[in-house]
Amino acid sequence: MHNKTISELAQGLRDKTFSSVELTQHFLDRIQQFDQELNSFITVTPELALAQAKAADQQLAAGNASALSGIPLAQKDIFCTDGVRTSCGSKMLDSFIAPYNATVIEKFNRAGSVMLGKTNMDEFAMGSSNETSFYGPVKNPWDHNAVPGGSSGGSAACVAARMAVASTGTDTGGSIRQPAALCGITGLKPTYGRISRYGMIAFASSLDQAGPMTRTAEDAAIMLNTMAGFDERDSTCLDKSVPDYTAELNNSLEGLKIGLPKEYFDEGLDAEMATAVDAAIKEYEKLGATVKEISLPNTGLAVPTYYVIAPAECSSNLSRMDGVRFGHRCENPVDLEDLYKRSRGEGFGEEVKRRIMVGTYALSAGYYDAYYLKAQKLRQLISDDFKKAFIEVDVIMGPTTPEPAFNFGEKGENPVSMYLSDIYTIAVNLAGLPGMSIPAGMVNNRPAGLQIIGNYFDEARLLNVAHKYQQATDWHTQGPAQYL
Amino acid sequence: MSLEKADVEKIAHLARLQINEQDIPEYARNLSSILELVAQMSSVDTTDITPMAHPLDIAQRLRADVVTENNQREKFQAIAPQTEAGLFLVPKVIE
Image 1 (cartoon, one colour):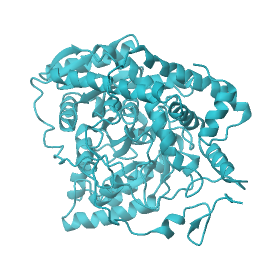
Image 2 (cartoon, helix red, strand yellow; image 1 turned 90 degrees about the vertical axis):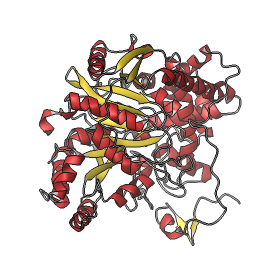
Image 3 (cartoon, one colour; image 1 turned 120 degrees about the vertical axis):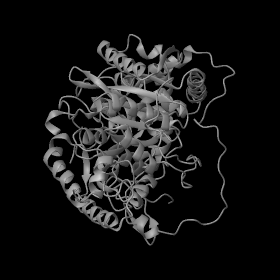
Image 4 (cartoon, helix red, strand yellow; image 1 turned 180 degrees about the vertical axis):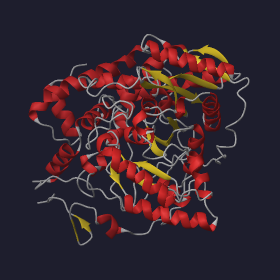
């Protein structure tokens, strides 16, 4: 059962080959069996899952089921879940039982899906390896010495290891696409504003966007159908109709114009990764696409720009973690300042503190123009690069990451070396565009991801482009042998 | 851009973060290397470029100024570190 996709499982439920309770129990058993080692869940919710499965079975029997009724999913521990601990990977929120549901969770509940648990992640989504989690790192199911990527590392690992059929992630600088690439699954970061951010714990509000993590593009389309849409509780969520993302999956790619940014294939790219990406592009040519070299000249500035904007926004967002209304509070504070300082000093991990400090510095008196304003201007230039490119091409392709999954501790010495691993994904967030990563080969027995970037609100085309590739190849059906 | 011990202490104070004395050199080193990365921004002339605050060119949505949420004080305070009589408790601020 665990190798089936969402659409196959939904058919099995309708045909009564198995019930949602049986399916859910099967995944819960697998979590019990494998997750001690992988650590992809922070909280498993078996009782809730089985209750939801039972309700879904009734819906299915009554004939009013949705595409996700009874489907067992994992939710990133960044989404508030009413009555269930929502830690965001931090000691700060270790005891935080969310008092309400994120809109995304609300939508899944209405669709009748089952929540198996909450997945592990870098603390407050700040990291690219899952090593910053208060709950310990997640192992990559393909190789336990390798990181799963981050910040949505638990969400990627649990799908790769078939402990959930699909999961949710969030992507501020690559946190869906990079772990999807490193774990060999499919991940989609939609256009900024496509999915409500209400109840999704904020890291950098102008960059954060939720999205699905699945094994196939078709499943990502099914998930997006439920996740996308207007929400009056998020002032940046767009009031724009949601198409049926499964409707155009099979469109022909004849005449599709693919742009390959030369900056994504320079000396920073691992040679074997380049070979894998080239092979994928060849496959697209076979499917009728034409390829053209393009330039995104400000690519090299994306990481520096991001490391002003994201920390600035995080230093502001995380000021709500002050030990007063929720979250960690220090013992016996002598005065209010002591309460703030020690609660935050004890509650946050090193990487989070570093980013808060960088952001605080960038926003402090006398430095605002040199850092924050400068970064906003560069953001405009980076965004304009894409606008120009999309006049000429339909989609942009390249590697998701410069290299396959790296080993634990490999990028531990200097935070900047970790930051540079997101070099191909970060610009997409700055521009607010949709981007996907799909499995496209293996390098040193570790998965390689192909990134597909689309124009604003062009998710249906991205999914179509990814789906056609998955019809023609079988990288997406492969998985780590011990979990198949 | 290289930060000194006093800079780190000042930033930590502004951010209301307690950091250990022995960790300050490492913070200074790491923060300096991040600021060095960020300094690459100055390689581009951005005169006359409009700063981009947000990915989408949209106006802020407005709504009528009416109550839309129920009062759930008890539920929200149930997760607070310390409350009394419907109030959040903090150390005494005014003598």
